[in-house]
Image (cartoon, chains in turn green, red):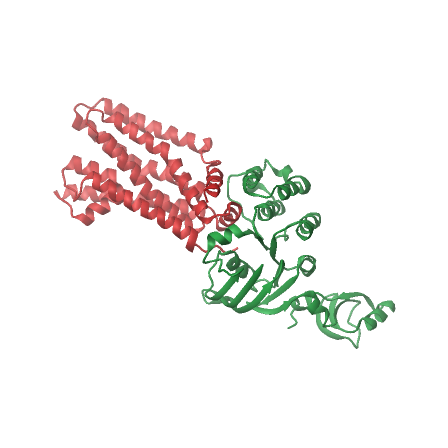
Length: 273
Length: 251
């Protein structure tokens, strides 16, 4: 999939949710990260064709999805964070629809392996937030489409289901994915290319390999960051520091720090720019 | 597109006729119509019997139409979240819009049919008037169905249900008041604009009132029916266009 934003802006009243966003990405797993209100959901809404930009353009595989909405919705399925179902339908009704327009293997995975079958007779409004999100994921991942647009799609799932669905996406899903998340580890698990938004603008974009070249590490500190390390950002018990691996290895062996790993997208998510 | 429409129609028809909603409403309707039928049996000539049609139309306009429409709209009006979910699941904007429209019309059809049959029973001795009024009742309800489905674009079920039932009550009631004034001031004929407004807001009542009180509308009942059909088609087409091309749904 190729996604291009050219001077993309979207205003709600006097508030700019996206401000002159420019990027061009080609990849199968694109991750959008950013704080609350950074513009992630607005970007994804424009991407699936549900919102129109105030100015600029967004192209998905060469076309503007909000101008060709029928084509866009054939190509894409959507899963969003807080599903609010207000319909008198049961989970098995969703399953029946997906049996007609969905992927059989995917349905079998959700119905039998993940265990959505056990919720079959429940009314959609009666489901817990995690169960609603599972039904949403079943819909979004199993309805046949080329691109899956997932907006904080795991936020209400327990770790077991995050592992099951995430592993399915990583290993078996044939479609391309655009995923927004607040969880850096989740992003790095599933992502190829990262776009970090801050206050409606692109703060950083690139791959994990791009980050690796910067020699930034996440260090688990005891009390305070040891002297001599260049602190990029401090996040409670984790500090982002610029250092060589040898120095950190030595500090770790002496027990000055409690461990370290190469920093991922948390660097940019934490506010370094 | 056709395959998607079939799946969408099946999805929206599921749970459309809930016995817990329909049984009380049809019982209420049977009660009112039963009372009116009993009243009509005691009336003599056809002119007198025609007065019961006026009562039927008033009853339908201010009570039954808003009730039936509100319960139908409650089924097809969805929150924005639910709409995104359905559009994503069904994979077709137009299919969702058309299926919602079809579900609403299909839901109202038995009620409209009941009205036509009931009116025909009431005024069997007065030619085809019962059928004409019944047809106008149906078309008028479709007009308000169009307004209701357009209101559902707002993404709030409460607004769609309350708004449409209020409009379905208030606009026909305003015609009732207007017709009363026309009668009081002995107006004998109406201009095109007033006639059009009367036909749009409450076609059956305007038709029956003109028949009963002797004021002349600017066009015949068939022209009034045609106007309603044209406006209905236009409103439905606008809804499908607005939903599928212009409605914004942020996730």
